[in-house]
Length: 196
Image (tube, rainbow, N blue to C red; front, side, top):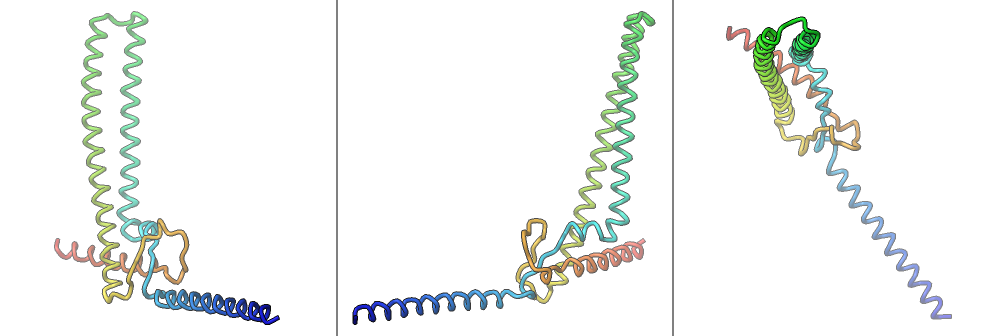
């Protein structure tokens, strides 16, 4: 009987120790979560800042439109040159032009195609450079905004939400970053006007 009571007491003691350990672990986790509060961590939805910013609404949309128009124009020119080549081949195959005339026209067309390709590459490189400059300006504005927002070091970590799987909305500072980006963009525009 004493053995049974002793075993029962030992089991109760062990269970009590486990509950205390679990309680201590939960308390430690709670303390850790309390230490990492909303003021320590934040995330930014950079794609939202990008799409809703004044710089994108003015310059970004215009650049996007320019990209689309250039692509369409180049595609139309390429299609026109291809059609001319097909028509030349059809005329030659039907015997409507001589071999010498077909060769001369083909050489002329080949020169025009080469000139088109060179011009297209220049235009595409220029557009690519404009896009890179725009992306860099946008990145610079966002970084400056975050630097100003966190100038006091209130946040120990600010992350890009594009890879974020789950987080409390309390940690979202997107609207604050967007407002600061727009403020900095307006200041940059004003400074550029005053320099002129």
